[in-house]
Length: 108
Image 1 (tube, rainbow, N blue to C red):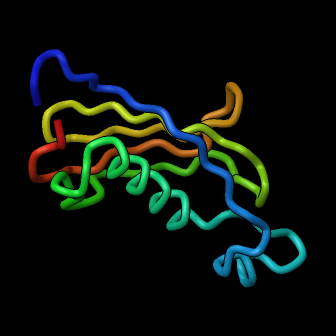
Image 2: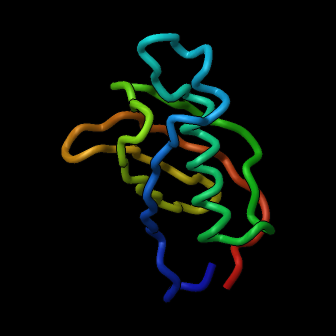
């Protein structure tokens, strides 16, 4: 990655009430499944870095607080070499954090 390229990126996450993963997670009190949050993080990274830079593995993830359907959260990404760290937060509350190990070259 060129030295003058940004190494941080922010995106918004909002999962609609009609998302198919919410039907069974949990009836009467839906929360957004962690896999949907992780998918949104990867989608944000691909929008930022391009499709030539892809996830190889999830290094770690912690889910700290639930995200409800229709709530808006922010995704903050930090690229450090091949490691992509993320924090998903709503206001001052961290909902999830972790890192992916990636391969390939980001788009310039």
